[in-house]
Length: 219
Length: 339
Image (cartoon, rainbow over all chains, first blue to last red; front, top):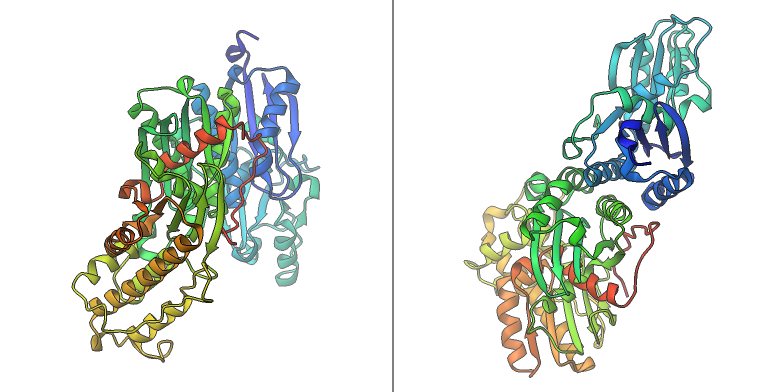
């Protein structure tokens, strides 16, 4: 494809949790997706997976218009693997790169609820540190992404709020024990951030230069 | 053959470009000393963060200083072992990505073997067989080399690395980080015979090292045997004397083990490398010792003793020539070098 940049290929990279992957979008539509082997072994597998992704799709990496990557929060080592790969790709190809907030990605791929107006809370398990969490309401954050204790986050949510992400059960369980105000947890499939979601969000967010791209750690 | 070398194994982000294993076109190192200073030691998480942010600017500087582009590079060599795993993964993933996109062979390099190679970056470098003492903050070992890539480990530390002992001793004495230079400077005004610190030599023929007992002895000398419960007693001793006595003990052990290795392996050349090789007493004592043994001593300049990527690119050249090329699933192996 000689004019790939105009055609709009966007690469998405997700390495923030145990299930990682890469996806290639063309004009907003997924055309190829690779899932990394389970476990935090993305350092071994991500570059080989990217090589295979482009080969299988029959697309030259030089056709990329943009690279998108989950910039966190999440597993620190996992994030850095994805971020350094994204930086090196964007630097090599001279294209922009967009860092996507992990909570934003979770909210964006939430299954539409029967009550479309109901806000979606996101919670990513940060183990002893609590949860990386936020509350997405329509087009903006009602509670900006931050690291919080599950009970404190639960107390800030209205009854009936649906919570999605790997830390959702911790937030919902805490709310049940403390206040009996019902929160509902999303299902497990919603808790896994997909590389295609990263690519789709990254295609429309502000991009930066590869050297300026930074991780979001929150701790 | 022009090789791009990358090293992010510990707390230095390093990129270099070396031609044919010997001609250094650029050798750029971003030090993280300021990041770790407040903790009196390397904090792995902070090291990894700093590598991520520093890598591309350092890569660009290395290419610019070498007056070349990625098109002019023939192979990419990267440290994949040993080191801090999170730190290693930053440089390794960058190297694999560059190798894939620029269609260059990828070469895996052992960081400690590269320290031994550093002496060969000098065209009048060592003649094989070589016995090498590598002592740094993460590693202390003895190796025999019958060629740049024909390396055998013949001794290693069973607990702490020598450089780690320098860092810990400096912290106990309130001398700051990194400890190597701080101890070296303080020791110049101290009495090396004031404290009779232990020299752990292990079995008569052992080429292994142990520095944990020495570390404890320094703690007792500096703060008393009840150091965990009592305030520091440093006012009662001269810090310079403790530093000098500690340094003398470390150097005595390193020279004794080197002497044992030379008597056993009968090399033509001896190399001392790693960050501890910057120590002035070790350099002076090793020079004096070598003059009595008849072997040629090679100690690289300090910029090539500390962590750098020129040594990675240099050794990587020989692996590339030998066809030792890695694939894109090359993994990081943090396992310390042990016999």
